[in-house]
Image 1 (cartoon, helix red, strand yellow):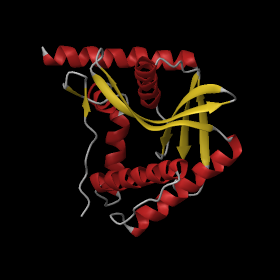
Image 2 (cartoon, one colour; image 1 turned 90 degrees about the horizontal axis):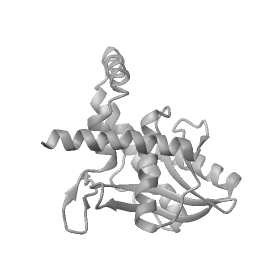
Image 3 (cartoon, one colour; image 1 turned 60 degrees about the vertical axis):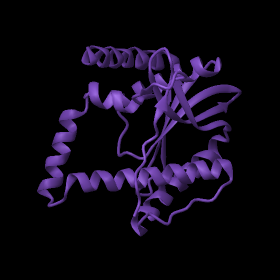
Image 4 (cartoon, helix red, strand yellow; image 1 turned 45 degrees about the vertical axis):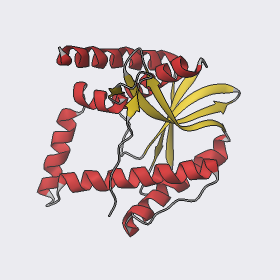
Length: 213
């Protein structure tokens, strides 16, 4: 039986802080109506929306593991995953390898843990790449679509990465890996849009601060 463990983030003075994705989920809510509608559709189909969501989450997690293992030349333990989860994750992974063969990026960092003492938040960034000798921050997604929240997340990660390393990011990249065999979608996120994402995330931080008062 698989036991889910969520990454915990601590500042240098050992204060546990909320993750970027948790803060976005709690305070942004731009997709709330869409999620409600999706849940209703699942119910009309006779499906448990929570189970459908969790299944998709497991597939996404395993797909990420396959991609990370490919970059680090490691093996993936699939013991705790179902046959369907493995099958779908491999389809998404194949899309990643197709993208890799076309773009041929240099992998600088993979699954890098980021924490900010100043902003009291943390997160794990999927990839830092060099493409055409420029530093790019990237996030892998196995969702059916790409949403503005993803740019907010990437904008926050970019800020945390620059604070933590001193390295400057030139642009962002959202890479959607389809689980049904439709390949990949690469979306370039310019610096201007990353700056927008960071501004939005700062409002999430402010809302969290107000909530604690």
